[in-house]
Image 1 (cartoon, rainbow, N blue to C red):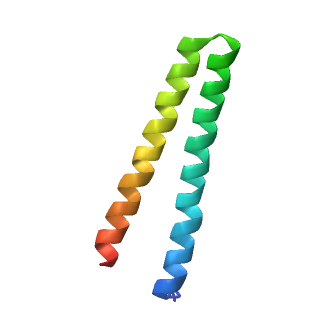
Image 2 (cartoon, helix red, strand yellow; image 1 turned 120 degrees about the horizontal axis):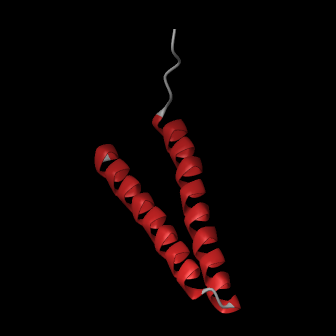
Length: 70
């Protein structure tokens, strides 16, 4: 028998998961900025783009979850 989660518990789990996407995107972008500062700009720029894509995915997930909860 499966246990049902309350809406508050679902929201807390969603926050934990989406928070990891946010940190991952920011860390990748920061590493790309670091690579640009030490001189390998093309590799750094691609890392910043990948970080931005992760943050856009984060944005889409948050908006989709908000619309479903509404």
